[in-house]
Amino acid sequence: MDGISCDRCGKGLLIDEEVRYQVHIVVQAAYDPMEITREDLEKSGHFDWKTLMESLSQLTEEEAQDQIHRELRFDLCPPCQKLYLTTPLPGLTEGR
Image 1 (cartoon, rainbow, N blue to C red):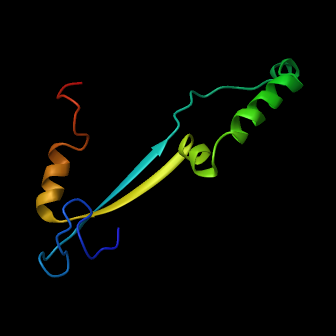
Image 2: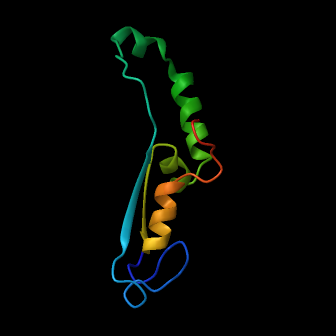
């Protein structure tokens, strides 16, 4: 992420390669659209909010953030960029 070396293989980008590639990954919670009514709010009693707050208090700030939204940025050399485009998620099989 420093723009000076490939985040995958460590090759120098400004010395060993003429071009570098940037990968920007956004991972975010995918919620279905929903409408919250006054009735829904009245149903959710004090206990529900207390339980939620207790579960959140068990997480670090970073863990709570990771459950909602995280952005990652990487610099890649040309060979690693080619590999990334071929297999962005190693371990997943084709056609999945």
